[in-house]
View 1 (cartoon, helix red, strand yellow):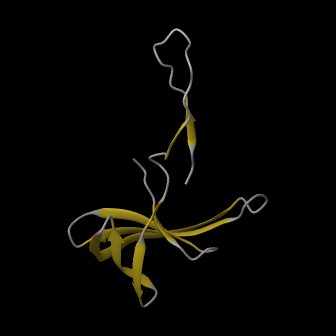
View 2 (tube, helix red, strand yellow):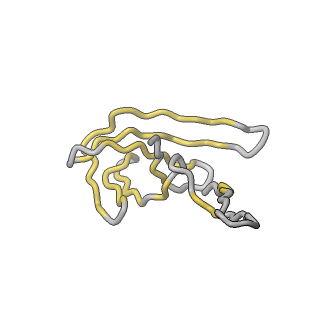
Length: 102
């Protein structure tokens, strides 16, 4: 999770700043995924269990090998309730995330 510093100026004679940590709306959100036959079948997202109706698209990103390597397999899913989610599996750590595009 990325942390951003935010300066808030208070309406006082001696102004002071407060540093607050706020996650970015673009930060990936961890999710639980149930896989069958190598593909996502169910997603537990915000305490709801969503059934995958269809995989609309898949793509892989391998980047920044010279810094901290990124290797992700993305899925654009349509769930049985009509919700579309973009998930990715971090292929280095083996964890799943929902990508927030906002």
